Image (cartoon, rainbow, N blue to C red):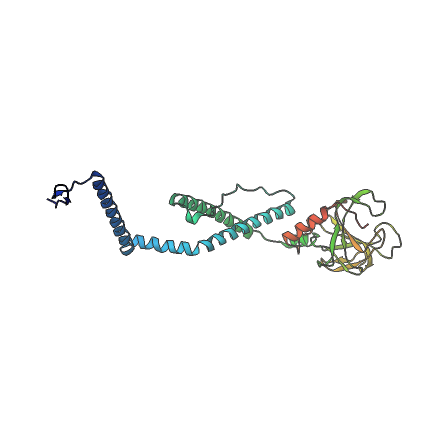
Length: 322
């Protein structure tokens, strides 16, 4: 039995028992419950800190590693996604150049969430399965392509054909050479009307070497032209695949008819003979007696970005130089 509390009553001059209020009892109960909860939570906290299971220790270690390397992993993931995007763009661009048709894109695979490392267990598992599926698909494609490429062989006939394809620019690539007018409808520099420009114009200083863009045989070499119109001094080279290349408005011509030439050798120099308003070389590719756009053929020695820039320059509707 607990001790009773008394108080002195001055009216009766006696000590009388003090009655306990219900509010005080409720306060004592709440205080007791709160104290018990705090003590219990403190015990649990100390237990979790001092007495971790092996699984708990492993998870704690993994969490620290995740916090330490999360920013680095996120940065690497973003860099990889950027690189993959650039490779896809370059692959599509190369396909257009080689096959003159757009690349049929495969179904896009959703990229992992940027906050994957902070995701819940179920989300993390789903994203991990997606990554494994994507990686397996890429691996199968790579193995298939590698096997196919390994089966290819270049015969001597193929080498002759490839070397006869005009795949370089008619001038050495430098800051002093520039494509100023492309193939197609352009403005004539003399009568200022629209006309079909049958080739492309590369500007360069007079005397700059003009190069054969493929192996072939010289079938025309016009020298000493005094005409103020037409191609002026020019060279036509016939190739073994039904293609002919033309180099016009030359200053000097350094080859002769019947001469066999190799890709990259000098056949003349830049000038402005014939109907020309500035020093340049007018370059044409003739396929089956019809002039075609030379730019899709100019793949050798150029990166994908450089070729794309060349195509942009060639697409501008401007005035030609001849």
